[in-house]
Image 1: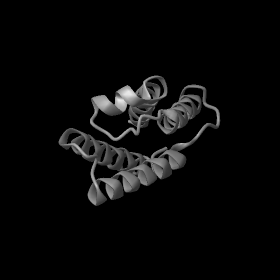
Image 2: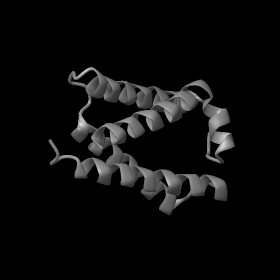
Image 3: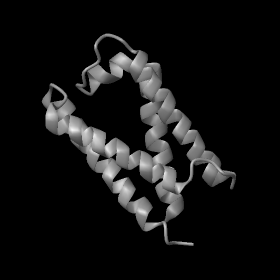
Length: 122
């Protein structure tokens, strides 16, 4: 089960990170999110997400010390709290963008719950 959770985390971060890194403004427009016509911050976020995905890959597939499960839990909880705060406080400006933020918030929460459940597993 842990392998599937880590794989889901890796894929979601790699896909979102890649889209943000390569197409920051277009990705924001497609999903109805604010972008400010500047791709720097979105690209930096994309790079961070790709780095986390790489750490997960190193941790799981190569049996080396990468990010670790507890690190992923912390990242997912922090992400969920920021998304929740932003979504409740102001939303994304469009219904589609706000719906996406809710989906991502619930997804980060779900991943955190699954990862916490795996902490006691051998």
